Length: 271
View 1 (cartoon, helix red, strand yellow):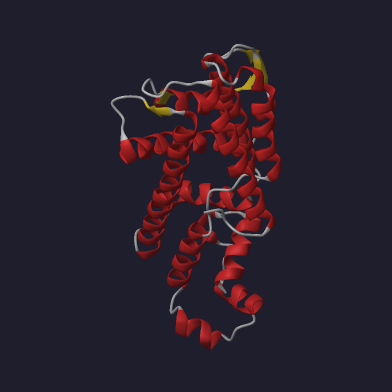
View 2 (cartoon, rainbow, N blue to C red):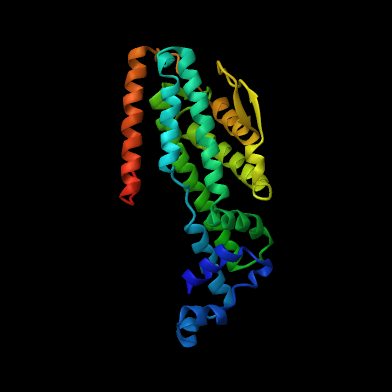
């Protein structure tokens, strides 16, 4: 019954009062007996609480596709001749982030599960006081914490890979968590803005931003998200960037991309 109800929400969206989730209809579609259903959930509110919590639980950050990963390798290849210089590194960082955030936004905008999650986030303050509202709020808080923990891990790896660091006074896991929270909030706003007008993602202005040596076609979402990231990150002055270090970075990127692609082909999740 939970599966049936969650699938219906993802397919039909969130209706006012969740009127599209009727226990009798769900019981019939799930093929269970009324007696069994009402032993498990004595009231519709009890059922809705479990359905909405499960809806939140099933939402996760969407991993990169093979095409997304290939694009990152292309960015590096396009700058390989200058990668060992500070400017070359900056060009790769900025262009790589631009490509990554654009792909990230498009994956989320195209995900029915994420659209449901955002709808529920917006709707939960209007739920009647009681168990449903309390459990949904707790589930949303847990989900945001898990998303931020994942972003913290990703940004930490990025800094290690590129010899970047958090901009002082931010440091450590707390600093990366704050960066993840800021990026997540910006992402939510961008997705909400893009859902009714997806063509906004393709409206671009050719300009050199954030220290790029060449102008590129920037969308507003790219500019906003990359701006958040680079306002929190900077080159680590204690780790000189050299051609040798650039070669090490390239090898590490290729190995990580190969591992991610292999994991996705196997249907698993990379460690």
